[in-house]
Image (cartoon, rainbow, N blue to C red):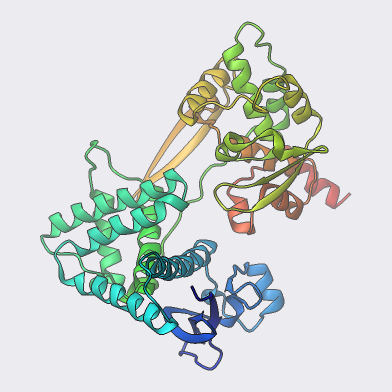
Length: 434
C-alpha cells in the first residue's frame, strides 16, 4: 500500500474582508499531492505554522504582540478548541476512507480519496431540507464527539436539542440553520426566559447564557462542515453573570484536614481525597485517573483528561502525608464515584460545621433572586480545585505560576476559580502604601 501524509496549511495567498485565510488540507499519496478546502477560515495570528493548528491568544498577549489586532476579533479558547477538533475530524474521516480502501484491497490515489470524502460530505449537506435536519445533526455531533469528550460536556447539547424542539413547537415553524441569525437568537433567548422545563422549572440567566453559547459553538461546527448557516448569529452578544466562587480559606482547609474522623473511615477517606485535591489542584476526573506510575521523585506527571494538557505537579508536605496513608493500597488515593463523592462531601462539611452563610444571587430575566445558603451545602468536588488556586493566591504566589500548576490557559477562565478574601485585599492595599 502506498504511503500517505496529511497536513494542514493556512493559505497566505487568499484573504477575506476580515483578514482571514482559508485552511487547506494537503493529502499526499505516493508523493502525489492534492488540496482540499476545509471550509475553515482563520486570521494568521491564530495559526501555529510549526504545529499546523489553531492557537489561543489571550487579550494580554494580543496587546503585546499584535497591537494592530481589534480586540473584538479575538477568539475564545473554546472556539480555538472547536476549530482544532474540526480539523481532527476531517483528518480522521480521510484516514478512515484510506483504511476502507486498504481493507477492500482497492487501489487509491490522493484524488480518489478526496473525491470519496467530497461525495460523503455532499450527501450530508443535501439532507438539510428534511424537517428534522437540525436535530438529527445535533445527534450526529453528539455521536461523533462523545468518544473524545468528557461525558458531562455532551449533556449540554442534549439539553440544547430539547430546548430548541420546545421552541419549534411553541412558534409552530420548522427551525433551519439558514434562519439562525441575530433575531433568532433574541427570540430564542426570550423564549428561554419564560420556558418551563419538563421538571416544572424555569431557567436562570446563567443556564440560558450557557445554552446560547453552546448553540453558537454548534453553529460554528455546522458551518465548517459545509452546512448553510446564517452568519448573523455572530452579532448576538451573550450577557454572562459572574458566579460566586465557593472555596475554602486556609483556616477552613486546616479545620477540615485536622478534624478527627477516626470513628468514621468512610468520611475520613473522602476528606483525604478532597484535601489532596486542594493541594494539587486536580479536577475529579484527574483524581480518578491518578495511578502510582504518575508519581515519581516528589512530582506527579499527569496529562489532564479534559484539556489533554500535561502537568508537572510538585507534591507538598500535606499531599505527601495523604499519599503515605494509602501506600499499601493499589491506588494512590481512595477515589470513589463522583456522585457518591459529592454526596459524602456535603455530609462531611456539615459535620465539620462550615456554616458560614453565603449570599447566592441569581437572575431570571430581570428578576433578582437572592437567598442565603450555608457553605457546607455549596461545596462540591470542584471546590478543591478552586481552594487550591485561592489559597495559593492568598499566600502571595503569582497568578502565572498558579495557572501553570493548575493547567489554566487564560486569565479569564482562571478568574472564575479564585476567591480573594477581605483580609488579603486589605493587607495588600495597606502594604502597597506602607
